[in-house]
Length: 360
Image 1: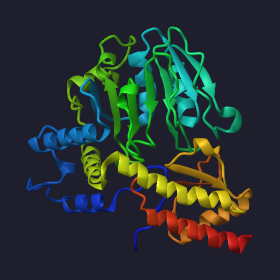
Image 2: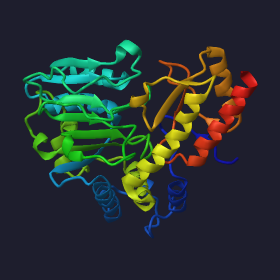
Image 3: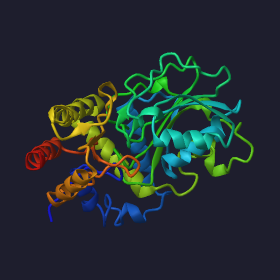
């Protein structure tokens, strides 16, 4: 069986050379005589793995010294609660709701204080990013929250919102390491790694040190305090060790590829191939306002549910996996993360052209 082109939104495609390297090291990592999967998280070997992973990530993202990098569990969804628990000092937070995940984060924050929905694109099925240049940011807001790239709907903030001096918190799960980013514009920037960086089970949180305190909401569990993990170098309890090891390999792969600027150029090139085809196709249509299109997640439809289903079925038979759209929106979605080779996108477009000819 040869490798398929995997367009899954997450867990998603990983770089082949990383998988091969991990396979080579499966039974004996670096002369230890064991797999990283079996290794004590307190061992010298693992300490080197996690420290190197953090150093490489800091280099890639140019993370300033006054930010902590935490490798945590619970996925991005657990952060929906951790953020208000740790940051809602005034019990007020402003949310910009541009998709399912921002909406879930907003609903979770409502359990802990007053969460205000200060902008939303729900009126048009989240197919655009609202103008965030002059929002009614609350005087006493502890932070302003966004989901920067919306996996389900295929939208992306091209300009960060004007938070009027308030701390910006961003979920970047599906655009993590896809392009250069100015970390200093955020108080917290976090994401699940299973889309662009590694296997499911790790969430990376990059958080400014002044936001890490013991002053958290009463009843916050020890495991849900950022301070617990920051004080213990992400090793307070057993971390998702194998997942962190793979993330570390992916960081090295991105460095080898030329870093985030290079990744952005490659990602723009890949996305252009697919969007250009969608813009000229008579059968397929993209669903997102052009200026808000994501480089990572590309949703599209034929306009007929039967044809959509036929396309997904025939695409799968031809070796294009996981093209079915999210259950809440239907249609199709191609996730073209860093590890998706340009050949995969070219092959998909060729297949779409043939499908269009046969079904016109």
